[in-house]
Image (cartoon, rainbow over all chains, first blue to last red; front, side, top):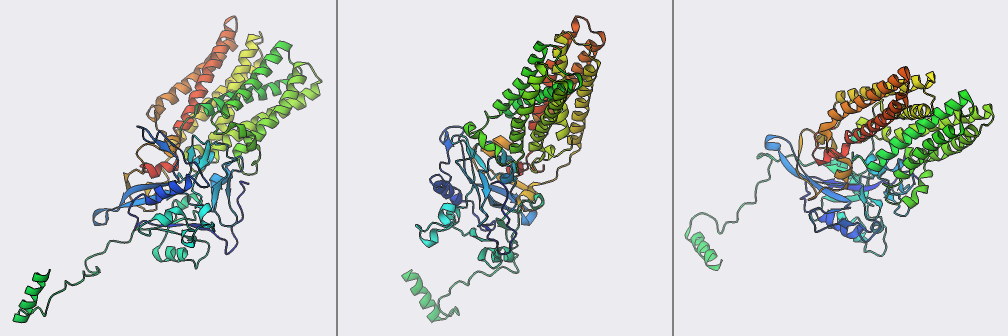
Length: 251
Length: 312
């Protein structure tokens, strides 16, 4: 059903991602592991057309942009992963004419039923975040499932029961959890780092949050580098020179 | 937005069909049975044929046309679903009206069915317009003139068709029809001019800084993929936007020319009247296809902010 579930109850589970723009290094590991998992999972296939040709096009559920922000000394380049934000009021769901797009009442995940989607693409028009990509070969819309086939999968080791992108991130820039619970690790992280919504003016109420890049450190508050180890007392005595010679000889 | 030919064909053909259908309904309601079987049958078949061809062409852009029946289920929230439901429901009074009107039924029955048909035809065009007007992601489609534009263009193109049919059947002198046709075309010109004036005045509302949440000036230094993806192809369509002003001018010019031809045929009549009327219908048809193409091509989607557009 494309009517949205009532998610206003206190304690409503809102599963989502928290993405740290400070630590993302743009390695594309999340995008490739997403593609690898989801082309054989719930969203399978994620077709690539002409993948090695001059004009490849394919359905990916996660895209990593590169943006530059700030001026002067504060100018910085950063990497910006973009995927479905599992909004609380997603117009992509309500515009769906068939009920193939839906938001799960139990955890807020937005999914497309690939067996009832007619491929009209209207949901992709309704999404401000470009989260939905049409699979022209499969004839249905594809989107992030928050790895719904991993996070509850008891056949996987407990540490693997999180989205493939989160598991793959080598810098810990992606966090998964319940953003409806104010005491969860992800909610605390958002609170302490000043996490923000994308395009809050559009009122889609995204569940996923982004953590801003940390302010550049000035020389005053920079943590000094560890002192270089000196051999001996450093007083130029005969003993110090001997140990210095021994150090070089053994090095 | 990418102007899909199937959607342009659908909205223009079915729009003209619903406009014609609505006017036939009103004609039946005011004049009783059709003046001749051939005229009645031809005009009803043209209206229903345009509508049906349009509806069929709209399924061509679907990934799974065989599942199209599922689109009737979500009328509670989806304007696309409401359009499907309205389109199917309209066939019921339209077919009954057609039978009563063409085969000379009871006047009261024709009038009731005629009004019902006219109302449902306009409701269907309204639901089509609302599919676009309800999307928060495209500000050009939130403009007040979008819904009136769809309705007025449907009536104008339907009226030109009915006027052309009437003159072909030697009934060019019906004052009401001539006046309605000219008024429809004039109103279409006014509404489209108002829409385009509104677009010119529209100031960007969202910036790349808003989209990325980074604030201030944000520049894109790397795109996520080596060739354009679905999002860019579907939502980032820019081709020929630079010709938009010229195309708007040609579109208005064609509508004005159609209006003059209808006026000339209507005022001076004679042997040229049917030729002028058919030519006016063709010109209005070309104009409305151009208008629909521009409607998509000039629409800027918010998602383009992630792909280098500074503000929409």
